Length: 526
Image 1 (cartoon, rainbow, N blue to C red):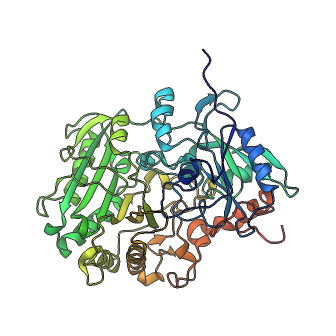
Image 2: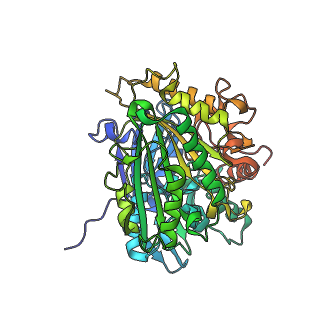
Image 3: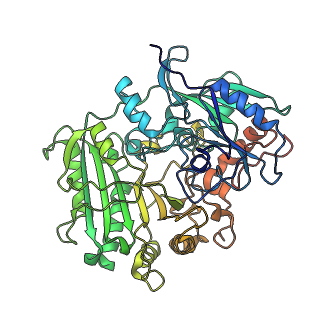
């Protein structure tokens, strides 16, 4: 019996039973009203669907954007906004295979992080150094740079990108399928490849496939520990010691050739309402004996951030926003790499959310720590907050990420030691009721502005910060009420890479089909 094949194109209109679910993504904050959602399962189907979309007259001129979805995690209304006419959903394209013609592993744009771990790794013994939220689509994750628990030892996802296939719209409104490679003899195609190594998704066309060469081999085994501190035991002094120790340790351990330089940690500073501060740590190790290099690195790190003299840490029993709790790992557990990845992978429930980001180049300043302490439920403005899903997540960063030359990819942030993600979540009772949106937005905006009060309310490029991560988009960066630094989002995301990205945009998307509130503006006079 032959295996049933997916139809190349499926169109879902408002009368379809699937429409209410497909007009939104993972982030329930944004609900679109498109004329239709089109699911595509082959690159040629993308060409057909995109060609039809850009040559149709909209029923409503106020809704004229064509957007692209892979995993659907978009943090702003770039995919599911009120002005969206058509959503092209590439999630059915999720295959992975070795392509002998390009001598590279092919990853289709609708695959997720979890496809990479559960499919690519068993087949190849190699892995994308990507994120730990399993349902995030690789189409967006890769094009923004991509990082995860392996990045301190292996670098960013795009550091291994060899080729990309993109459906682009010409000035004549025809659609072409272009394959661009890292060593492409055509400089314009080479620029198109480069733009997809950090230039963000949805800026140049519809990505259909990626190819990767020389992907890293994950460690055979890792040590994993997960710990919590009860907020009731944490004082201002111990909080300050924790953040100082955390930042200093990573500032001092930036060599990917050492176990300490490969160690990854995720510190979740949950709001006091959640009850705990959580810490997850992973390092490659061959045994749990203290003489093992990885084990010694982990013990050294824990001695710095979780000393016997401080508040007593306990097993982690409460989740960390997008990550499930790991309750049986207070004592470090030795396990195969994929098993540990399975234990940590999560995305949390579908709900509304708002996010902000920061690259941090040196340990935190005293005013930054004081602001975080206060706005995590220890000042008059936030003590009353009851939302348990408000937090500041601080990931370790750098090491192998900081090794490649800045010009090799479109990711300019190559000398940071930590990466911050401010997060707040809330439930949406119904499509007509946004829930506690105003209270949640106030908390995250006030907290972020207070942390970076000395630099105009944002982590500027320069000093101890280095801008923001395009995969955590934040429209507040272009709002003078929240950003008085003089640095717009384009500088915070892309820095010196922006003018070149503008030239690529003008060449490959001359009609500015792929646009949103923070999309790359085409260069003038090109």
